[in-house]
Length: 111
Image 1 (tube, rainbow, N blue to C red):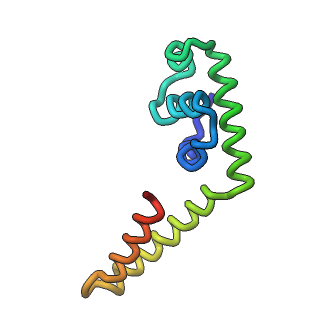
Image 2 (image 1 turned 60 degrees about the vertical axis):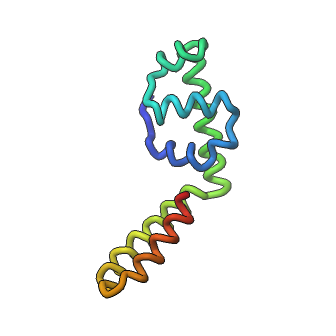
């Protein structure tokens, strides 16, 4: 089972909508980098059960993203902010006010 690291973003955004067990399983798999066997050992379910839990939870995250599009918006906003940052660094060398405002926006979005 190959890990799609984009799923970590989906987990961050939509993880609260999963069951506690699904969240814990995906978190262990993606954020703690545990194998299916390690998760199975820690949770007391079979490796196949872990695989099914991950697959079902990922499917749910994909459906949520398709319906709501929060991760796409997040990536789009991040790209625009990066472009703004580069431009601000070129035109705002005197006092950094524009750069500071961009950083404030980043803090609001990413916290």
